[in-house]
Image 1 (cartoon, protein in one colour):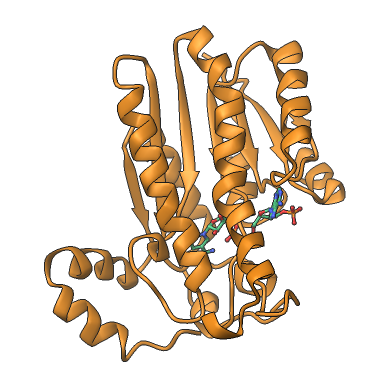
Image 2: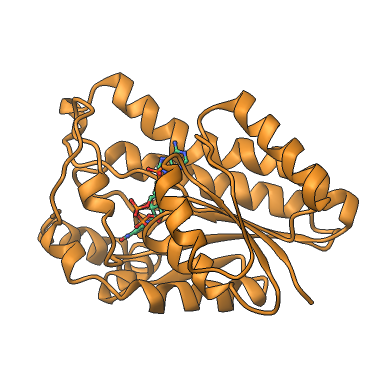
Length: 257
Ligand SMILES: NC(=O)c1ccc[n+]([C@@H]2O[C@H](COP(=O)([O-])OP(=O)(O)OC[C@H]3O[C@@H](n4cnc5c(N)ncnc54)[C@H](OP(=O)(O)O)[C@@H]3O)[C@@H](O)[C@H]2O)c1
């Protein structure tokens, strides 16, 4: 059966690839992000899509966007809160303003859109809600203090929400990618809010974004509560959980770039 799938950050990287992965079975993909031109370009690659530019930090715009989708489609089957911005700066060199901005996009943006779409899912009696965390949402990592904090926060929110929805047919999933080859490091913010503009060596060697999107799609179809995708760095999630001393030993020796 065809589905209505809403993806934020759909103009590039993982979001774009997810849009392509879901373009089958008559699915309609709602493409959201700030850059309309990028979304329009992705739309040309899809049989059924709807371009809905939106800054997820704008609560009023979220309400308007959700009302528009409710009018047009009535429901959303899968909401993928993929929009996010990374950080490349020491904690003490990151301004409070930039720190808040990272929380606004990565945490509140995801949470506010989720809460706005949830009534549609409750009415329909079904749905999948996805939060895009990171391996850095499972452990702290240098130069990503606020980013890591914003992603950790998603776990608490979506776990709690998932438990609140346990008697419904609405499922929450949190995705933890390791290093995936996208422009995330180029788009990351430095401490003063300037864009990092560099493809970090670790990012360059990241897992192919198509592989990443396919794994995320499979996990959502299985209603998994967490999905891990990446290279050897994913092992660090298990080290942190089962052998924290080994995690710290390795983490101190890993390049943050
Ligand atoms: N690549 C990795 O290694 C990796 C690892 C762990 C987690 N992740 C997570 O995966 C997600 C996607 O990242 P990516 O790797 O695909 O990088 P990306 O290409 O930089 O994608 C980020 C997307 O978020 C959108 N976005 C940023 N701020 C927004 C806002 N205020 N409102 C709406 N959209 C906004 C951007 O579009 P606009 O600029 O047009 O708004 C962009 O399309 C992020 O949440 C990221 O934290 C990535």
